[in-house]
Length: 310
Image (cartoon, rainbow, N blue to C red):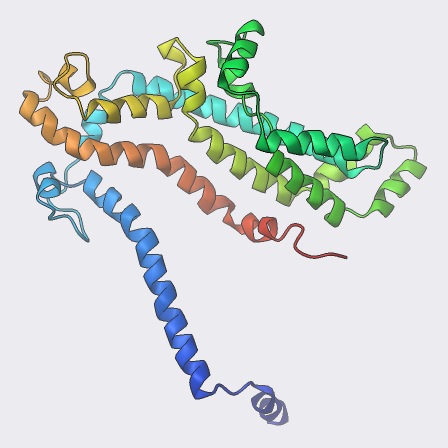
C-alpha cells in the first residue's frame, strides 16, 4: 500500500489545459494519419474494383464489385516479369555493394590521417555539385558500361549523405579504445574493420540497406538514359511506359492498343486501363513498403545517429 501511495503522490497531475492539449494533439495526429494513409488505401482498393465504379467515383472506403482485370491486363505485358527480375538483381546487388563501399569509406573517414579535412571537403562538394548529365554519359560510354547491367549496379553507388551518417555512427558508437586494444593485439585496419567494426554495425547496415534498396528500386532515370536494350530495363522503366501509354491509347504501338483484340476491343481496353494505373502503382510500391515494414525497428536507432554528443 505504501508503494502504491508513493506512486500516486509522484504521478504528475494533469491540469485542464493539459487535457485539452492532449485531446487536440490526438485529434490532430489522427487527421494526419488519415491524410497520409487514405491515398494509399484508395489506390489499393481501386486496383481491385470494377473500372466503371472507379470512373463513377463510387470507390471510397471499400472495393466495389471486386475485380482483378487491371492486374490481368498489366501482367499480360511480356516485358513485365523480365523487368521485375532485373529490378530485383539491380536492387540486391547494387545495395549490397553500396553498403560495403559506404561502410569502408565511412571507416576511413572516421580515422585520423593527413589531409582529412581536404578529403571531407572534396566528398561534400560532390553532394551539391556534379559534372552534369552529358559528361557523366560520355564517361560511362568510354568506360564500356553503357547498355550493360553493370551500369545499373555501379551508378549512384555511394550517397554522400549516407556516407556521413555511417561515419557519424562509427565515431559515436564504436569507442576508439577498442581500436587501440586491437592494434596492441596485432590487428591492422583490415582486420579491425572486418572483425570489430562490421559485427558492431548491424544497425547502420540495416538502415543503409533500406535507404539504398528503396532508392535503387525506384530508380528509372538511370535505365532511361544508360540502357538501350529493352531486355535490361528495370521494372520502374517498364511501368513508366505502361502509364505513359494510358494517355495515348489511340497509338498503334501502345500497350493497351496492342492488346485491344485480347481485351475485347479498344473500349474494353480503356476500361481496364483506368484500373491498371492503380495496379501499376501497387506492383511497384509493394516491395518497398514491405522492406520498410520489416526493417522499421532499425529506423528509431538510425535517425538518432549523431543526435547526442558524448
